Amino acid sequence: MGSPFPDCVLRNERGEEVRLSEQWAEGSVLLLFFSSAFGFVCNLEMLTFTAMLKAFQAANCRIFGVSNDSVRSMGAYSESLRIGFPLLSDEGARLARRLGAMEPDDGPWPGFPMRSEFLIDRRGIIRYAHIPPDSNWEPDYDEILALARSLYEEDRKAKGEGPGGDAPEASEGRPSPP
Image 1 (cartoon, rainbow, N blue to C red):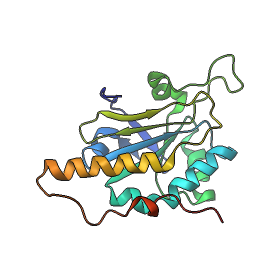
Image 2: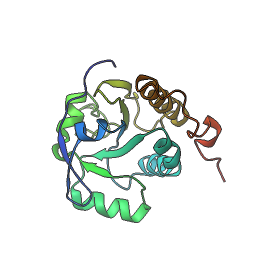
Image 3: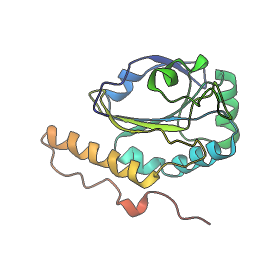
């Protein structure tokens, strides 16, 4: 944390190029690395962040799922689950490798990215990085949302806008289980 995030261009689920620095220039960016489309725990994470999307948008935070799946697989995955944010294809897992977010070679999923989360501020600095020792662990959704809101408030203060009144409270973050 505290170091610059490597800028790169990845293709989204529609095959369009997305330059990460253009995204974080507009607001914070949350990258959700996951091992593969249609994985059970990955599905839970993508659907939970989709349910929380409005709260992240109110904090001016863009969410992107990132996997080494092909653009075509990402499109099918997004459509099947109705994921509410873009998915980016890191074919060959080059970015995940650069970030140290890969499953160990002697583990059950060698060659796959680990489910991990990176929150990047408007200057391209990593403000949160979570690479769990086990990809079956879900992230602390509420902690990530609180950090995104904190970055939003920092940006508002830097612009001289004062506290934001339109960002939802923390209780409006993660949905309650059915």
